[in-house]
Length: 456
Ligand SMILES: *Cc1c(COP(=O)(O)O)cnc(C)c1O
Image (tube, rainbow, N blue to C red):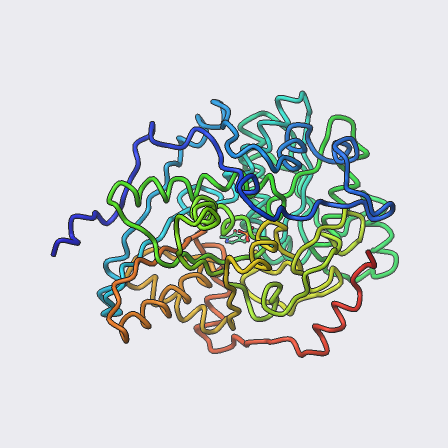
């Protein structure tokens, strides 16, 4: 078969790694709406943002005109320890499915943090160090972002304070210990260390915490401690910018063999791995150079794109952050517990929200049982144990490949395998034991979340 010329893994050489990130917003006809101040309702200024975020990252956050931003040599040197990441041709999965489709996945789980999050963590830590800061504060839910940031901070010799949602802190001791191995201070949230934490504890002494609360504690710590700033692992423009390395490498690898993707699929929590993967392809689509389909996949229990509203909302539950215009379920929406912790966010990147609103991409929501079934099928033929988050993309890739089987079309399907699932074995256990449920919020629950949207 002529096809066999394409290797199982398309590797790029070290010197083929992109030297600049791609800022998709520069090529968007309709730019994403700016962050606005919740009090004045005016666009956030650089000065206002610099109280919370590193100066250079604020510049990146607000820049919607520069298409390429050079990746500093120090960051490229770190990237080289685990990048370029492979683009894998899923020959074994194709064989198993007996599909004429050609399936490719970009694998981002090949580092200790186990996901794509390290791509942005190292960039954010670098700019903090360059600014002369001493430390960074952040929150983590299940722990992937906290792990990535602790690795990045230890590399650049920065202090790393992680507020970890209390229930995860207690139930996921392994990720907590990975963070401590890299020198991070991990505090269960809510804690007695911050005013907002003490307030929440006084009102709800038995609370097991939430991501929204942990964000509030991390922001409070960052702005009140000399030499500290706050960092976030998804949603923000700067994070999508850093993650564009995923898409740029994918495109370079496909170009080597003259492959044009017909469908690109990625899971979407806050939108950073998907936004990074699709960046160059979406740029081509906007310019009329590609007509590939782009599909975002989200959990049915937290369906921001498919059932949310495109509106200004707070980025956190504590309502202390700026307002972002995005597909949202409302900052007070508490998704039912599901095992894809990294996808349980009420909102969505403003860039992806605008593109979805303008019809450049599609979205699908899935129940978690179907996702784990796909995860297991994938693991059994391709070897890699996928993260529950990434498995949302696997499921849709398999569905699309099966459609090709019916029609006989030889489509090129590319999906993002954002990470590995070694720390998610409780979830796999519940799937294997038949105890996994597929909670889907009622229309009333969705309406209740949206009723809390701020007036703008
Ligand atoms: C955090 C995470 C996600 C979701 O975050 P995005 O910003 O939407 O990419 C997806 N996959 C893995 C493995 C993660 O750790």
